[in-house]
Structure formats: C-alpha cells, structure tokens
Amino acid sequence: MQHKSIAIVGFGDLGTRVSRRLRGPWRSIGLRRNAAKVPAGVRGVAVDLGEPESLQVLSSLAPDALMVALSPAERSVAGYEAGFSRAMEGIVAGLGSHVPEQAFFISSTRVYAEAEGAWVDEDSPLAMEDPYARAIIDAEQCFLDALPRATVLRAGGLYGHGPGPLLRAVAAGRLNPREPLRYGNRIHREDVAEFITYALEHPLTERVINLVDDACVSVQEIERWLCEELRLPYSVPEAADTPRRGHKRIRNERLHDTGFTLKYPDYRSGYREVLGDWTAHSEREDGLDLH
Image 1 (tube, rainbow, N blue to C red):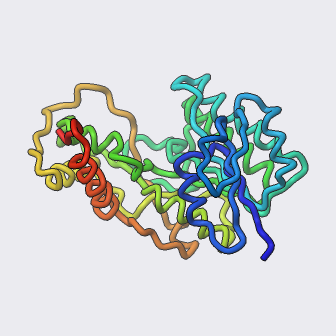
Image 2 (image 1 turned 45 degrees about the vertical axis):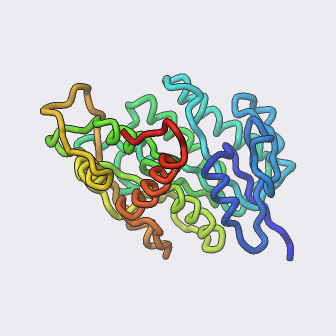
C-alpha cells in the first residue's frame, strides 16, 4: 500500500487526536516548535511560525493533505496578527509550488459579526471591524486564495480536553445571571478530529463549514444542567458583574450535508464523559477537588 501523508501545522491536542484516527494509507507529520513533544508514531518536524524560513520544509515534505491549527502569539491585536494572518502567510509561502490534495484550516466562529444572539450560517457577515477577528479572517482568506482544494472549518467552543473553563467556573460557583439569555456554540474535540479523518476519505466540496454540535442552547441551560450533574446548588447572581461579549447561534446544516454523524451531538452527551473523567481523576489524586 502506498502511504499518504497529512502535515499538521500547529500540532497539539487536535493533531494528536487526528493522528490516532488515521486509517488505511494515511500517516501524519506533526509540525510544531518542539518536535520532541510529538507522540510516538508521528513524524515530528520542528518549525517556528514566527520564522517563515523554517516553514519552507513544507515544500520538501510535499504532503498529500494539510491541516492548520493556529493560536494567537499573545492576547493582543499584534499577537493575533502574528499567530494567525502572518503565520498563515508563512505556511502558504512555505508550500512553494506544492498544492496538497486537501487542506483544512481550523478557524473560529468568532469571525461572525452577529452579536445579539441571532442565527448565522457560513454566508453571514463577518466581523471586519474587530481587529482580533480580522486577523483570523485574513488568515482564512489567505488560505482559501492559495489552495484551490482548501476548506475553512469554523469551530465553535472546543471542549473535551480536561474540564475546561466552563466546567471549572460552574464548579467554583461562578454562574451567569438568569437574564439575559446568552447562547453558546460548541463542539467536542473528538468530533473535530473524527471529521478531519472522515474528510480525508470523503473529500469536501464546500469552502467553509461550521463545526458546531446540534444543541445551540443558552449558557444558562448548560450551567443549570452541570450543577445538577455535580450536585451543586444552582445559585445565580442578580446581574453580571463584568461586561459580556456578543453572542450568536450557529447553523450546522453544511456539516450534516457532508454525511458526517456527530458522536456528541449535544452538550449532555459530551459533558457526561468529561464529568466522568474529571470526577474519576478527582478521586485518584490527593488535593484535587471539584469545589
């Protein structure tokens, strides 16, 4: 069998999950600053997204598929521009004349302009005036312009790698007030990884796809449910003590149109597993407490 390779730039948790799922001829190459952190069974290659010259290795690797997962260099506009738009420019330049058969960029639903809780889809207006979102949007456009068989995957809030900020906040009693309702969009990391491996065998035709589950519900509903699962009182404040960011409801029809089936279609199915892992760890480790 002739092997095929997928180069994963920004190799981390998602890259590890994808690599574990590869089937048939596929093999993964993990590109990150410290190649020693790439797990066994994956070829590790050291690159620095802040040093475009190091990304020229992509041309010689000539991967059949490419996956890009970026993050801000720091939590500032300059950090977002370095971590997204300039990093993507370096990746595209590093490919040289090589064009992968398939390419995926794990983007974010943050790029949408909607901020009052209305429904949006892949064709909805983007937040061009938000410099943080604009850095991600510019990275998307660079990716799509350079690679004819590329797909931007706009992921909702990723969870499933440890308890995460929402679960920790609920366990600590930091809840949202009952009103106004605020909607959230999320997707389990396992479903993102499974979708990438699915797409390798079922090539995508859409250029942009939202990766969110089927349960776009209010944050208050999730918090109430988590309190029940943790056997904690659902005691909410009268009003928010800090300004809240805008929110939106994300449609995922294009995701379903690919024929892919979510393993965790809603927060209950996903968080039950997270809760089980977390509570089991709490019982094993001294000093780790849910409260």
